Each structure stands twice: as structure tokens, then as C-alpha cells.
Image (tube, rainbow, N blue to C red; front, top):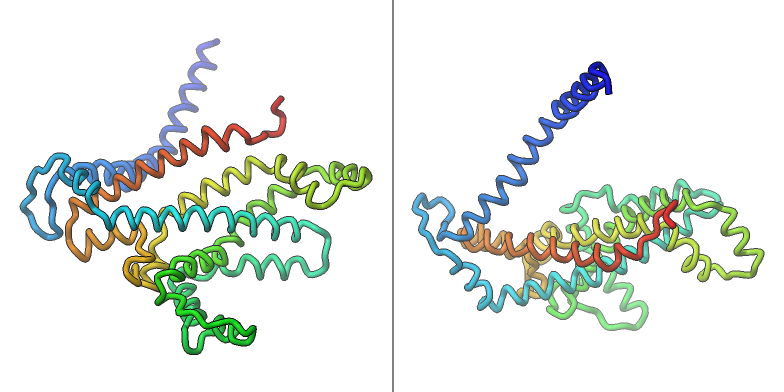
Length: 300
């Protein structure tokens, strides 16, 4: 390689680092430094607003093991994830397949399906509080019209968390649908035409052609959905405050309670670190299992 070429490559590298530097600084200050600070807090007795900090070692983590409420909150979060993500992705895939067909007024349908995503989370939560209202809510009115019993959706520990799951599916299916719809545009149409000529039914085309060819996008959507499910806070805060009887209390809300209501920053940091480790382990497990089944175009 000539000196001129080597100098040009070095200048390119310097330019790339210079362009990346502001983002790296931002990432370090607002992501990695808070993570390290949180780990340091988890090893101490830290109360909000109290300048005195005392070393505790692993006591906060041992307290976590004996915290029965933590395990209930953990189970609530796992239930939310295991129900919301499969259902939301399935609904999004079906909507995307339907909107990928040549029908009149598709722009209107696409806007209607995507509209819930644009609604602010707090506003969406308040809307669904009204929909779930036991005395006058439209959902209970519809149940009465069908001859079914009314439900105290957000005030019944058996139905409060499923109610939030239903609301989350409505809120985020449109976002997943938009991503999957873009992936469907890349599937060659001649594959569907050949399958139709061979008498392959629509469900079989979906299962054996569509899903394998958009599997990278499906995998991306599932990962994004899992990350979102472990960040849920606003809906719980607006709709139930973790109740009734902690039936809708999830990890992020429990972290908020300990950090800002009980002012125990040390234990809140322990919970946050546990959540981070668990999410990383879950994503790693997903990559080792589902990720191996992803089919990328061009691979043999």
C-alpha cells in the first residue's frame, strides 16, 4: 500500500472517530456511567437526600432473595412479557399480511392501525381507564349487551394485569406491523404465485413462505418487544399504581417505589442491576435459540 493510500485511510479513520465522538460521550455519560454508579449504590446503604452512605457489600442482594414481593413482581413482569409479545407480534403479522394485499383504501387502514402508536402513553392509559370503568365503561357495556357479567377490570387482582396486557397489544401492534409490512415488500411475489398454482392454501403460504423469509425482521421485532416489556412503567403508574394488592406491580414500578417513594436508592439500584442482568441473559438465550433459526437471504 502506498503512503498516500495509507494516509487517506488514516484520515478516514480519524474522521470516523471524530464523528462518533459526540455520540460516544453521550452514551458514556448517560448509559455506561449510570450503570456503574448503580452497581456502586447497590453495594451501599444509600437513602435519597441523605449525604451519609454506608458500605453493605452483598446485603442488598441477599435481601433481594428473601423479598417475597420481589418474586411476585418478577412473576408479574414475566407474565406480561410471555403474553404480550407473542400476541402482539401475531396480531401485527396478521395485520401486515392483510395490508400487503391489493385492497382499496389501504392507506386509511394503515393509518388507523398505526394511530395508537402515536398516542402519548399517559393519554392512552387514561383512555383505557375510561374504557375499563366498571360502572359506565364501554367494554362493560358491551359485555352486558352480550349477556356476559361485568368485570372490575382494574380493581380485580385476577383481571388487572390481563387488562394492561390487552391495552399494550392495542398500543404496540401497529408499530410492529409497520416494521413487518416493510419486510413483506421484499418477499418476491413470484413465490406466492407459484404456490397458488400448486394449490398451496393461504395459511400454508404464511407458514412456509412468509415467515421464513421475514424471519430476521420477526426476530428483531421480538427482541424489541422484549426490551419494551421490561421497561413498562407508564401504564402501571397511570392505570393502577401497581394495585390491586400488587397484582400489576412490575419490576420498573417496583424500582420506582423503592427509589422515590421509600427513598431507598441502594435497594432500588440492586433491583435495577438485577433487571439489567436478567434482560441481557434473556436476550442471549433468545439469540442462542431463536436466533439460530433465522434465515437470511443469500445464506446457504
